[in-house]
Image (cartoon, rainbow, N blue to C red; front, side, top):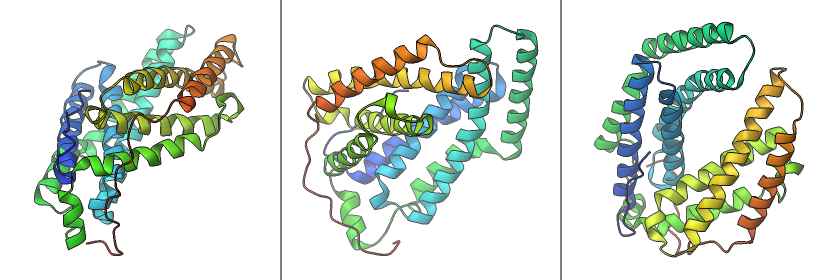
Length: 280
């Protein structure tokens, strides 16, 4: 999906608004694709937009009311999980060479049930509801210090959240092959968070560092995605460990080693003022 082009001097509040509007537009569009067609791209693209949205909510937590943001995040995760069942079925069908006819029927049934569940739960109201919540200001903290942070240039927040995401990614260790499957899945999710944050703020850091970092990160995510698909296939009894899995582990290790050796391409700015206790 296209990422809004943020200026370093855009206020935190306006930057969040641009990200919310962009994510909601994609969620609305891709939900319609899924509800009205058999196009396989709908669930996948909607899930990417939902994941970007929750990443933005987490990044801008200092200006958000915890209760309202938590409710939005929970609703987004429920929608993400529901679409995940369809996405998993599509991936399994595409990679399976056995009883295609039976699997196709099963995949269509999963799609039918998920569509009904999403219609019954009025999932199409999610994006318009969030836009209304942001537009009214109800999701934003209102105390004086929060208002200062809301008006501060987003570049002050960008470096801080990138530092936090980088530390979290590094906390998983230096070798994906040494991680268990659950830990490697968590590592993959944290690398997605790092990538989405970097893409939100990519205009802030001109130069060669970001393009190379991004290329390595994208390839690492491809390898981790392949490993995740192979692990899911193994859980379903399709196959044991394969040469492709060993090759993906080796390449993932090389890419992660290269990334860890690169200096961060973002600069750590002065800290955003700390939040006092309280919601508002």
